[in-house]
Length: 161
Image 1: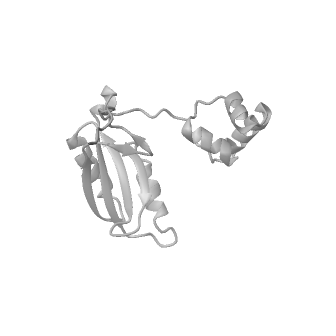
Image 2 (image 1 turned 90 degrees about the horizontal axis):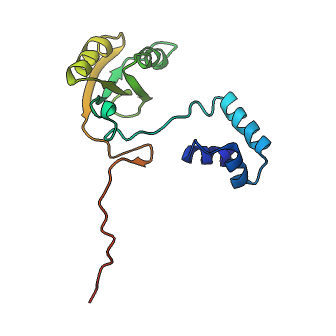
Image 3 (image 1 turned 30 degrees about the horizontal axis):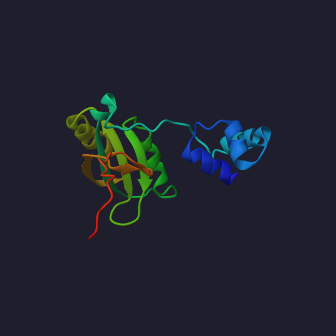
C-alpha cells in the first residue's frame, strides 16, 4: 500500500496499469489498493499543482498567513474554534501550532483590503480569539516540495588552472 501511495504522491495521474507495472502487482490488486486508500480516507483528493506566478487568476490573489492566539474551549480544546475557522471559504489551510501562537491560518482574497476586512471582522471577532497577527505572502519559492521559481542555469563546466 505504501509503495502505491508514494507513487501517487509523486504523480496522481499514473494509471492503474502503470502502477501495476512499477510495483509488480496485478492491475486488480492496484485498483483494490487505491479504492481502499480512498475509502479509508487516506487519499482525500486528486489535484493539479499550478504555479501561481504563471496563472493569471492566482497571480492577482492576495495570500496571507495569520497567527492566532486563542482560549481553548472546555471539553473541546482547540477543535471547536478550528471548526468554525476552516469553514470560511477564504481559509485555504489551518494548523494547530506549538510555540508563541495557537493556530496558523492561510487565507486568500482578491485585495489587501478584502483580506484585512476578513481578519478584522470575521476572525478577530470570533469568541475565543485573543489576538491575530497577519503576514502577507509576497512570493512563494517552494511549497509542498514543489519549487516555483525558475532559475537560469549556467550549464558550462568550470575551468580550473
